[in-house]
Length: 114
Image (cartoon, rainbow, N blue to C red; front, side):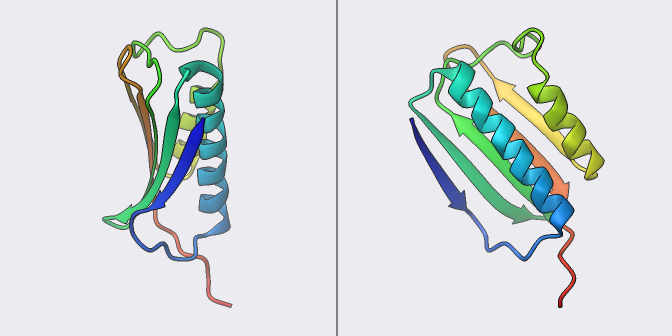
């Protein structure tokens, strides 16, 4: 599977809590893509909009019907809780045979300057 990364806007140095949150969401999201989607490719996008960091994970896999995620899986629940604890939101959009988009949006907190 091909996985690409796009930094759509220059990113400032982030607070370590925000960096860790986005890393863990990316890690779990890509794990789900590899394990369930049967995708040929995935794209991770990072951007800054309206003083928020947006992380999007987009795949071209088999998708799913929202509300019928993998039974017993805690991945999406963990991602939602992690983003919520950072003051953000997580949105999942998917349709059968149309891929999946996971979008996390968290408030921008810059790391203190040394």
